[in-house]
Amino acid sequence: MLLGEASTAQSLGADWQDRRGGDVRWDVQGGVATVRPSGDPQDTNDLRTRENFGDFRLHLEFRVPPSRAGLGEQDRGNSGVYLQGRYEVQILDSFGAALSGQDDLGAIYGQHDASSNEALPSGTWQSYDIDFRAARWSGGQKTENARATVYLNGQKVQDDVALSGATLLGDAEAEAPGPIVLQDHGSAVSFRNVWVLPTGEAAP
Image (cartoon, rainbow, N blue to C red; front, side, top):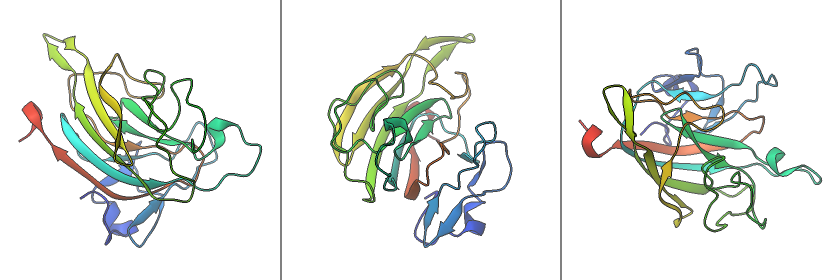
């Protein structure tokens, strides 16, 4: 368990760091970690796991804050979870919206939009369950794309889709395993009950 009910700001630092390797700067209370937006696009306050992962199963729960009327879609509870720090699964307030543009809740950002809109209203706890298979490599060359199956609030919205490359703002693809990254995109999105289970060929 990377983030559980007993987590505090101090204990969170045993498993997480900011994206540059510094101390955790998020608000943590009652096992809930909430993005503390940096306010500087050049200094995002992302969190990344200290441990790196190959193939894995990920569970996390998140809550997007209510947004004031008139905000554009990408300003409504924007965050994301990066698999291996490379491939973003979008977090956004998409409740009641028509899906388009490969950037809604449940999307693999810029590559695959969700197959259906399973978003709940803002302020509600929601969940992702993600099965991830890392890209395969031989002699320094990628031989197979990474793949992901994504369940949003218990409904499958990505079915073993191929990830053609790193998504926007993700780390470059590489043979080495990578971290789980929770994104600061300027919204006070909260997370709880985050766990990762290594699977497949990459499991110990």
